Length: 61
Image (tube, rainbow, N blue to C red; front, side):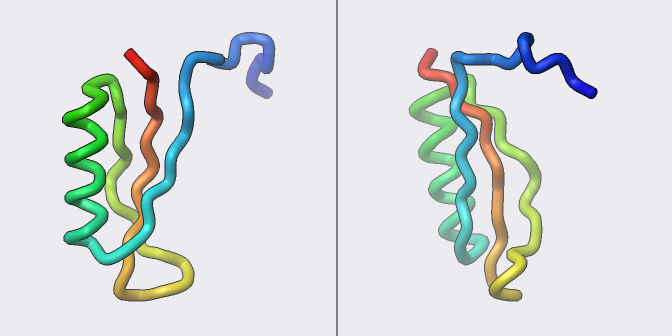
């Protein structure tokens, strides 16, 4: 079990869901504005087969 006392308090987790080309543009914009953003690979959306979801861990640095 992970040690909850060691959680990072300086980051936000963001999920982007939509058509692959739009999600790619949004992820590119976020990573351009916040170079510390760490995106995941695209995953299929659970609700719409034409959409993907990408998760990012973002810090304000």
